[in-house]
Length: 453
Image (tube, rainbow, N blue to C red; front, top):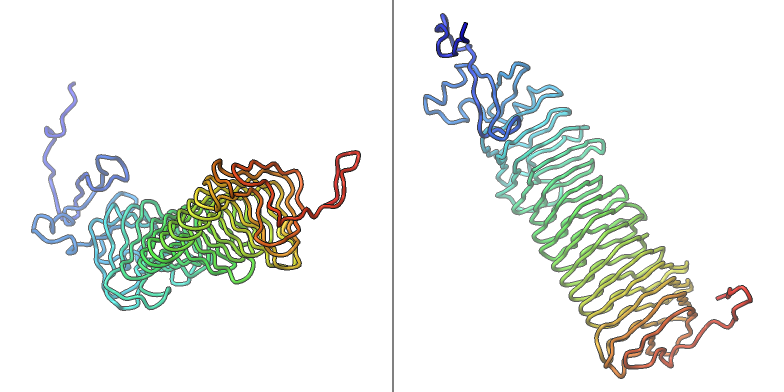
């Protein structure tokens, strides 16, 4: 017997508003790139055929276990009626003007490529956890805060996460604030793409894989010992830092991240407990500027100033500073405890390779320095030293470019005693060691090749 076609089957004996039909929503690609398949009631289609707008029957929907949707006119209504495990679907752009929407634990939001906008100078935020632990996901859309003025970093935001135990994961979501800071985070935030006019993100919690731009101030602004940033990018197109770790006392973590700035340091580190595997770029200031921080495997690049700068002590390792205009690295120790730098690489195409200074009773100790200037002439020195007699350099090389008759490799503008050993010099034009520098090592090598410095 031949298989009967669907169109050959008998007519339905009874149809009412609750009868189900099958539809394919081509704007929803959660199931398949060509669209997603759902069941709907005939009643839910009535507004479409009568010419009503989507708002007549709800822009936000939650499906039950049969695929049947219940629609809501506002996002807050949908969240209030959702249960943990539900995903709210968004079916059109939406503009809110009065309220902050409070997220719910376990309730996800799929924006399906649409835009949620909060407008007006009312102090409200687009979304918030309402200072209650929330774990949820937000997918594929744009969240906009507009038509307001900056007051502070706690209002008129795109997203405000207040509870330290909240965990918000985003994928393909763009947060944009036109006049204010975009996000304030005290919990954990993943994956956000952010643009803020004032600041991009103010962070006192944890950030993972965020990409942040600010138009005026710092892109990623951290000012708490609990601030942590991982695998992220911050770019300031104004007068702020790309990433600013402005920690009041030793704390905070910055790892595997990149900071850019058109007006300040690409990355600024103050009292940072751990900065590791980061890169800072600046076209106006320092690539990376550090104070009283622990820094490992970091690189600073600048086209206008110092590549990597530090103004006080602690421990640094595997540091590279590269400048097109000034010192490759600028290391100034002003602490009573020792400042140690292991593996310092300094390169300059516009000035001196490195600057080392100690102005307190603590020692500045550099173990393995590679310092070079690539310009000929007076400013093209490999390494300048300054301050008191507490600088120790153990191993490495210094070189200057050929053709500069007055460019010394190892230079001081005033008499200074430096303890240095196992250094190689390539003086392209001037002398290897300037006459103002006196060798501070008085001991000799023993029979095993050791020396006390």
